[in-house]
Amino acid sequence: MVNPANPPSVEAKNWHQKHEERLTPGQKIADFVADGMGSWTFIIAQSIFVALWISFNLVGWFYHWDVYPFILLNLLFSTQAAYAAPVIMMSQNRQNERDRIHAAEDFKTNVKAKQEIEELQRALARIENEKLSEIIARLDNLQKNS
Image 1 (cartoon, rainbow, N blue to C red):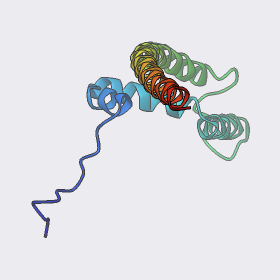
Image 2: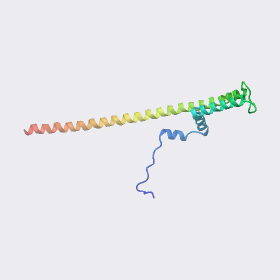
Image 3: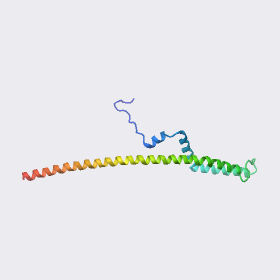
Image 4: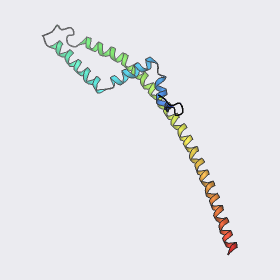
């Protein structure tokens, strides 16, 4: 049971979480595809696929659906590249936009921190002046009383 006098703390969302929430389904797909195609898992899987494709078409155990020079395989790669390049570019463009937003948020944070530091410096200087004035006043009283 939640105590109404002491409600649970609600954690504020950072800029990255807010940015992720604004993504459209297409942007999420583009990021997923770019992440997948830019991984060693994809490179290894595609290399195994190509090795099997070529092996099955060179060895006489199976029906040769794509004889040498493997024109169907080249067509598959061309189609993959034709779709992959724009999707990866969409993801990269969005990453650039996210980086710009991040830089702007960092700048705002830095400006706010600078203002807080300057305010603290002014407060410390004011306290130092008050204490110094108090010390001088006490010294003057000591001199008068001596």
